[in-house]
Length: 310
Figure 1 (cartoon, rainbow, N blue to C red):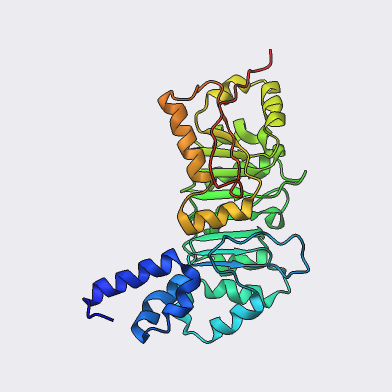
Figure 2 (cartoon, rainbow, N blue to C red; figure 1 turned 90 degrees about the vertical axis):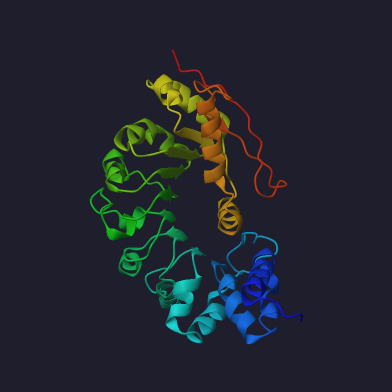
C-alpha cells in the first residue's frame, strides 16, 4: 500500500466501508488502524431480524448486513461499553416482550441511539430509553395506554422530531392523541392506516408546530372517499402540511432511510413543498403515490383531486 497521509487514508477506507458495508469485515483485516476506522460503520444501522419461524420474514436491503439476537449479543459482550454507544445510531427490532432480557440488553447497550423502529413499545423499556438522544421513533403505543392517556411528557418523547404511530385500538381516542401537542420538538408525525384519517383535522389544529402530518394508507382511493365525506374536508385539503401516501413496505422503507437518508419523510416533504410552490394544486392534490422500494425504488408523483362532499 502506498504511503498516504493518515487523514486521507482514513477517509478512503471510510468511504469504501459506507459504500460496501458487507466488505467491512474484510477491510478490518488490512490493519488495526483500519479496523478502528471502519468497524463502527458496520454497526451504525442494526437490523435485528426475526427468527425464520416468523414468516414472512421481511426483505433486507441488498448489500447491507442484518443480525440475529443470538449472534449479536456475543459481539456486544466482547466490546467495551462505549463502542456500541458511540457506533449505533439506527436500530430496527421487532418486539421486546417483558420477559425478553436479550432484547432489553441489546437496547440498553445502544444508548447513543437516534432512530428506533420497534413494533410495540413496552412500559418496561421506558427507563432504558429515557436518556437516549432519540430523534425518530416508529412504534406502537398501545402498551403505554393508561386510562385512555399516554404520558407524552415522558423524557422519551422530549427530543423527538419525527414520530410514526403504527397501531390503533378503539380505546385510543381524541383524548389519547391530544397529548401529542405536549411533545416539544415534534415537527413530523405519521399514522399508519385509514382509521387515523379522521384524526387529521384535530391533530393539525392541536399541534401547530407540525410541519408535516402523513397518513400512510395502502388504499388511497378509499382514503380519498373518506376525506371527501368529512364536514371539514375543504379545510383539511387546504392544509399544505397534510399528505396521504401509500407506503406498504414499512420496514424496507425504514432501512432505506437509515442507510441512504431517502425515506417516506423525504418524499412527503418534497411533495408538500411542490404543493406550496404551486407545482401541484394545493387545494386538492394531497395524495402521493409511490411504487415502493421493491419497484425499482422510484417514486411516482400523481396528483389526485379530492372534492369535499356537498
